[in-house]
Length: 351
Image (cartoon, rainbow, N blue to C red):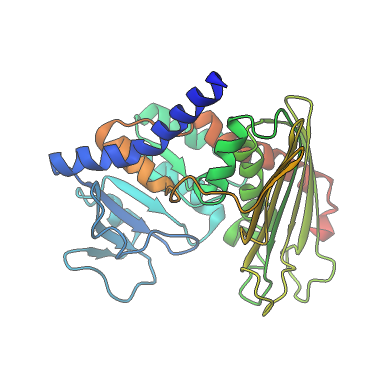
């Protein structure tokens, strides 16, 4: 019981770090100069940093926004953005995901920190090159890796770490999005379904379930997809966990429209020696089941935490990140290994 209380206090301190950092930043007046490049993905909103206590938007390039806040420069290329001395960090959503690792390296070598859309790389070798350049240049590189810090996953993460379900034995994750003609049929554009949707699921396994992936195998299919091209419509992943447990991931673009379900219909179910905890229908239903007790819905521990806020706080005040670089990128690393085996095993005519 004492250990659980101590763990709860530690988790509370971690959650308070960004807020303390914001206060410190506000007192000092220091605000990080941010540049946005590209709109292919979950780019930071141009108007979203206006009141941010430790970051400010100073420039953009190749973004869709027709209007910009007063004083923000619009550059015509990534090179011009990188030449702007006011830009300290680049939020990177490259027009082609296949180019994003190279773009990240350009940013780092230009002396800019990088906050990149997922997946930042399409092969493990690309990921390692980016991380090596970040280490060599002394600049920070992070992915938009905040899956576990959105609600209700933040609450689930804390409860699992407090031992609410005991030792984790099995994890089931579903990531199901709607399909439409806007879906890229060239995987070089968005990284492909397996990586761009699967990375959220892999993070749920490790960052919420709290157990690292040890072995991984994956499959994907075009079966039933109305368009031609490289795009896939469904995938599956089987995982062996380091503690001896198992995990299964279901990924697809088969969430039907007009059902009342969210666009990203997610399920996360974590089974342990003491019971299970789950979120279904994109967080619309949450519960914790233990012998003789059903807690439904989960009482959320607080608001979601934006991963960019953690990064900006860390750069401005020196506050620690909630994940180490190894923890942050391990789910992607393992998913990349599975994808590379899929590529190697797939007949060239069907790639």
